[in-house]
Length: 97
Image (cartoon, rainbow, N blue to C red; front, side):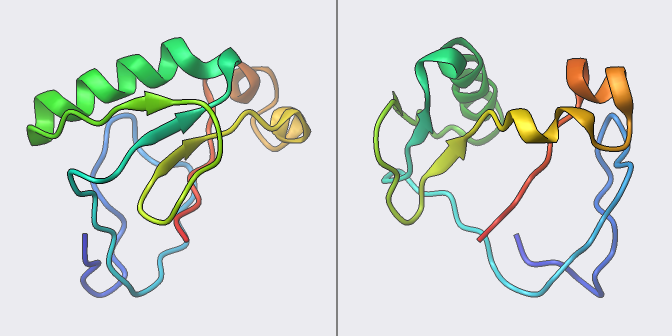
């Protein structure tokens, strides 16, 4: 994905905050979804959703990530950020690096 003019992407639900940068994100057949055991069910669902949208059937693993992987991480320190209880139940933060 290459952002154009740092525009906020149109997604549902809408983003509460956006901080865009330049660069390219490429998900390939070599990409994997890496998740802890606590997030494996979510990772499997994400893999199925991604396959439906892209045709890429990415494997779900737990362990160490490598460049090009998608990592799902549960960070308990984020549970009290802006958004309170709703953030804790439904919120997420996306970092692309």
